[in-house]
Length: 393
Image (cartoon, rainbow, N blue to C red; front, side, top):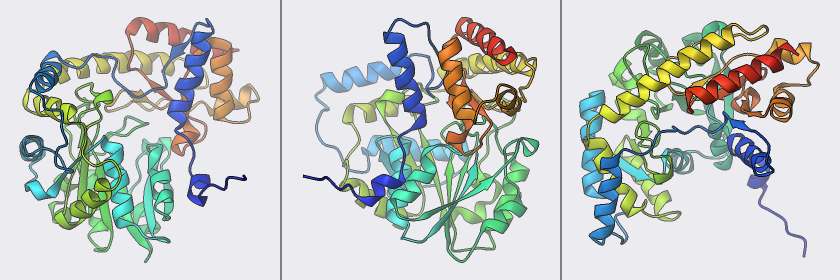
């Protein structure tokens, strides 16, 4: 039998970050000395009070199905978080809890987009945005930001990309992969453009909200509250609370769209894990002390990595405002060593020096690399020594 797969599977690609992690793991299992700077997850353990909440939930038998859109206690905690942290008011029917922020975003694309619709995505972008759009049979419209603009698009670029087919605009700040955050003034400028196009929905991905050090966090709704009726705010507990494996994300927005996203989720995964939901309640109501310790460590590591990269010949560094990533341009080294592109750069770096990272083309910006500094300072020192040696060859 000849198996013919659905055409949509041919349009999307496997996650480049997971592919790098898998190749590095295979080499490590073969006994090679490998440093992994590819995967985007904190190296800290989940805080004890969050783990304890999960243990108590298990012992209490909280192991059955829950409402598709999340347990009331978690949705209430999310509403309070939006109010206290962001000054945003949402009712319970305006909130959806999903199996990770990725599912929340996927639900939106499936619930809202039709074939032929256009979605504006600033680059560099999180790797999954374009593929989620393609799976909804819509068209990603990539707007490229350069290092000269600190990898942030401006109002003129946004307006030039909008057509009568534009249905959705993604914005991620602080950004994966660049770590750069939009200022309140920059968000206001983008918002002024969007106010002119009432048929364009806005998705703000705030997953790294709490991991920021250069400025206070703000999203596009803080800058332009007038966009409330057509903006969805996406977030989760994975990054700020070191809960990547717990898989809890959430979205707040117009109840009609949230309701449609809930319908999609009801026919795919149904409810998120009951135990993880109880843990997420503890995360959102347990204060930010553990978060701040993590942020302080990430800021220290960022300072070290950015200084070391800045001293390497052929490397252009744009300092991050937050997250645990930095996104240097290595095009000069690519050309100097005769590599075809950043993919070959990353592969040769892994083969020659045992350092695994993700090429910038995976995020829509060729000639760059994404370095995750979510690892110990000792490992980062070793990694920077190896990268410097590679750059100087």
